Length: 140
Image (cartoon, rainbow, N blue to C red; front, top):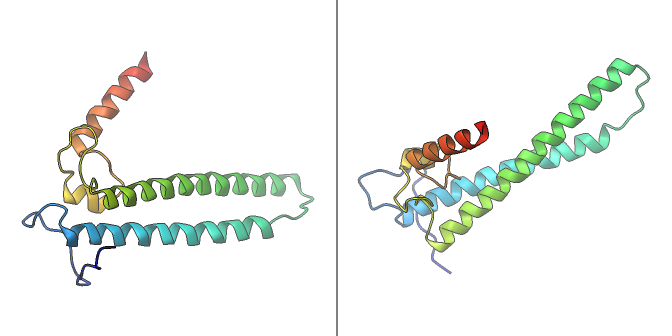
């Protein structure tokens, strides 16, 4: 087990330091863990709301509205579950020393992109190429 890296509270990864050094990887690990914790808390409150929300509503319009709300909650929860899976994958990449590198090109992903989207697996350029190819194949 690696010793914990000291990280000042105001630390932000900078381009002028070695890419994915201990401080940067610890910064992203903490960011991912905090995001995951927030999502798990939201999921728990969603489950409580869904369990407590089962009731007999006589008005058809009100019942339809409630069912729509529940379906939306379930879709949101499913998206959160997928996001937690991507966060876990990013944490695994940190542990394996692969975090921050584009899976398509092997090049470093920009720190700005990782800060905005810490689960990113591709550089912006590779992601755009991927999306263009996907769009072309969908149009066939």
